Image 1 (tube, helix red, strand yellow):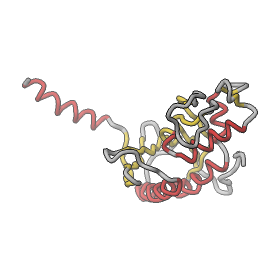
Image 2 (cartoon, one colour; image 1 turned 135 degrees about the horizontal axis):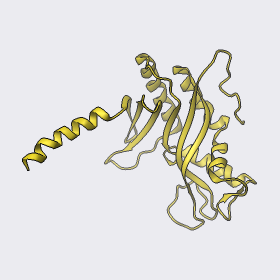
Image 3 (cartoon, one colour; image 1 turned 180 degrees about the vertical axis):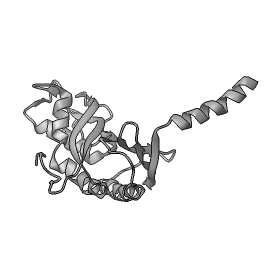
Image 4 (tube, one colour; image 1 turned 180 degrees about the horizontal axis):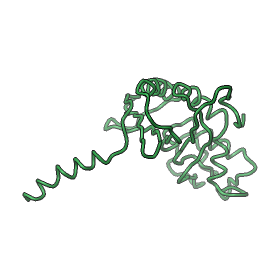
Length: 205
């Protein structure tokens, strides 16, 4: 028992020292904590949404952009000595307007099978990334990223969730009669903005 009492504080201290993430800004949206973190080791920014004991929170599109405006202003004041390569957004389902856009776009796309629940050609990850790499999704984030001199250079996803085509519990914007993607882990690839570069270069409308 004495050994455990001695080692536990040491383990916790070492964990804190080895944690590369730095909390840049924290705020509350509805009943959620929303945090912007910086990871210098992996050259990554992360937006994390934490639900509290008060239950599920409703994060609106305007709330997220307002949060990023405050968070990036705070980050610019710190003048970080790192060139960020990506921004991790967490699960798409936490951003209802992105989830709905993804599901609706896949449903309307001739390159997606709503019966089989997969891309007709290629792989699901490439298609979902391509769907989200468009002006509707990316430009509002670019407007805020300009505060720290960055823009979105690409989109990637992991662990895609697809509706089953059965009447199970799904977000209200998902048609359970078909199979469409509605959730995934979302990453934005970042690049430093150059003078004269448009934030919408290479983006689909």
